[in-house]
Amino acid sequence: MNFSQVLSLLGGLAVFLYGMSSMSDGLETLSSGRLESILERLTSNVFKGVLLGALVTAVIQSSSATTVMCVGFVNAGIMKLNQAVGIIMGANIGTTVTAQLLSLGDISSNHPLLLLLKPSSLGPIMAVIGIILYIFLGKGTKKTVGQIFLGLGLIFIGMRSMEAAVSSLRDVPAFQELFLSFSNPLLGVAAGALVTAIIQSSSASVGILQALSTTGMVSFNIAMPLIFGQNIGTCITAILSSIGASKNAKRTAMMHLSFNLIGSAFFLALLYGANALFDLPFWSLTMSRGDIANFHLIFNVACTLLLLPFHRLLVKLVEKLVPADAEKQEINMLDERFLASPSLALEKARDTVVHMGRLALSNYERSISMLDRYDDKVNEQFREDEAALDKLEVMLDNYLVKLTDRALTTEENMRVSELLHTLSDFERIGDYADNLRECAVLLDQKGASFSAEAMEELKTLTDAVGEILNLTLRSYESRTRSLAVQVEPLEEVVDLMRDTLRNRHVERLKNNECTVELGLQFLELVINLERISDHCSAVALFVVRETSPANDLSRENTHAYLHQLHHSDSPEYTKAFSSYKEKYLSRIQ
Image (cartoon, rainbow, N blue to C red; front, side, top):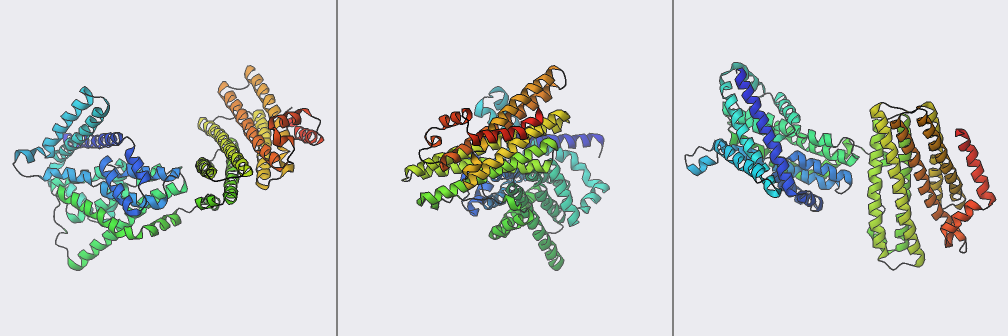
């Protein structure tokens, strides 16, 4: 194979892969999110999931894209793990459509209409139509359709170029030896998986194999392990997309890999065992493009039929392979059957709000630890809990709205209002903790750090906010007024610390003791920490109001209560305020 042929092969491969990418992008754009919506809504059982997975993948021509959608849905809590299994199985079937289109190159009839269907004719025709739509009539849907036609045309053109480049390889001894080595099942599977993992498309790697089949060197015992490996290699995209996602999202990617590994291992053992016993007549027969496409389809359908009855076991397997941390077990106390008993439903809703508070506190502590020393694993744990907080907020909102449709007492309506406000406060605390995390990530990426003096000031403020968060959560969880009344004096001390640190840091900036970028980050941290304490104050105030006598000012007018608290000589408030000033404010003065 000379240099010109190598360039022709690489150029054909580049055109082929670009055509695949362009066609897939166009088809996804044309769907305008409707296919994602279908996947999300119509997966009530595994059989529907298989059909939908096959349909969506056949339309967008990418099993990787379909599986990545599933990973995203599961990560967001929109779809459950047992709903994703059927879609993944169906995606493997839908991805075989491309190979069937490429098998049109086997058409041998001289009929003019049939000759137009051959890739050598169809490719240029579709490319011309596509470029006209894309460039000259390129607006809206027409441009997208042009992109699809152009992509498909480039696939056929690239395929034809690769076939021409490899046509002379049939007489090269080194190439013959290389291909014969793929008859070793382990080597063949590894080669197929590696190529597919690199180009991240099983459809494309099968297309490359179909191009090589024109050399006459691709026999059944060579193509079979390569195709098995291609199915395994395509899992790399979903695995990459699950990095940093939730445990269930990782399980979705692992399910894709497990499904293809089990199916490939089973049929590899079955076919090699059958050949050893019965000397299968087709074992060494040369395969055409159509034969490869058909085997690819039959194998994926057979895998689905084999494992579909065991889909629940497959879910259990990946749950074992990717175990959840004990504290990460997903809880769902919001059973709609509780709505029939409003008092019970309110108690369960309150338990869930408490759980949100714990998640917010855990994330606050993680963000503070990352400001001191960044850790990827801690960052991943943070993101999982932040996603859980957002999900719980939506679930609780919907649950409490449904509860208000019931006949509630005045007291129950007040509790609904309190829960809606408190869950919002805990969710916002989680958001501010996320802002702290983002600052830690930015500092780590830039290799920057605050001065020792600034770090000591931050440590004092974060300790104070950590205490106010713990006080708030303990008082809310136990409905303890004595704990709740300590929150407001500490919150006022945090306000004083904010003003002190802000003024001091501005002075450092004026004296060029700190860069502007680091100064802005420092001030942003101080602001976010103070806002966390504001939300703690709001939660504690609900506890104070709930546990106060009926004629207490905190029940009648919360603003008046706070004004009186800050401007009175209450011994309880004054003592707590002085104690917290000594504990925290004195450390930075």
